[in-house]
Length: 452
Image (tube, rainbow, N blue to C red):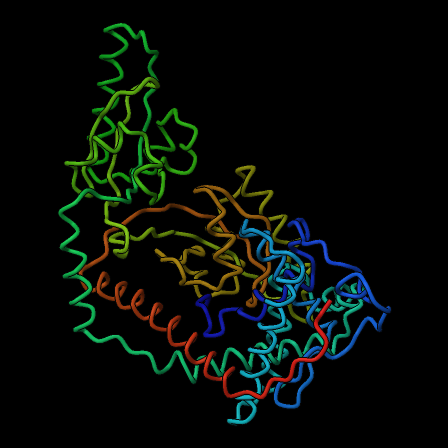
């Protein structure tokens, strides 16, 4: 029901921020006013003019400026150094030339995008920004963007996705021999110290000058944590219940990170620990019950995966129930749940318009990437026990709660598939770069006046 479609909202991801302003707080490059000379001398000229022709198709100065603004936002958000305007315009122009060459390849080889696909992409952009289609159209109009032009952009992005999938992605294969070779190479490095760790902890607070009685009480409490964890209780739940650390609400887990981002005490303690081991160490803050979640050399795929157990209530807008009415109804449910008047599962069984209703809305243990992005983003932001505000996905309007999270080891087969995915992604990147360069080399490109 909630699984991710092939397209994966790529078009919405590319266009939502740039068109709807959802990333408006990011710093932007300061571009010179349109219409001025690029060098600051010489006569004034029209704000829009042709800067290049790609196989008889023109690229205008206005298009380059729009692309430069998008590129500037991306650089700012990723905290990369901002080039000067001339370099920024040059990068934007080269990106547009490559896109034109790829679009022409798509058209020439018969790729066509149906109106229904554009309709779906447009709806996905609206959903990704938590608005409906009429509101999307209002915002486009307010920004001076013609809807027909917006749909043309969507169509072109879909064409790019399809031609790249057909000409590059589908041709990439990873053999079992390549996986074996990669694993052998990485295993040779495993004799050295781990470079990435994922540790979870429960902190039992102690003053630095703790008395013998205080230390003994803390040690007894730490031992009870270990006994409960070894008996099968979820360590993250124990951290939320018992830890005095600031990260207790998130289950006490630091996440996979390089060893230089961990306290030296934790790194030293983990050296002779196996994944899943528990150990008690003392710091200036108190006693830490450490659990080693993952240990690996950089470059190796993950050996564990975090799973999330979530439940939801789904209402589908219809002629009898508008999206606004569905949100209002779910808001009422949320108030009753949070105040303790009713259990989430009871309302899900009675009202959810989804196959999970009979299980009280429970969706089972899910791994990253299992759900559509607009659903998974909300799920990932929730702490266990928290109830979301109503939100919209392509399936309808949801209310969600996360019941539990856990980290489980990957099976040998799953680890091999993780290696396959990692090797395939690298191959795709390399193959795409070669493919794009070849298309660019074959294209007839005529440079006109420089952008500015």
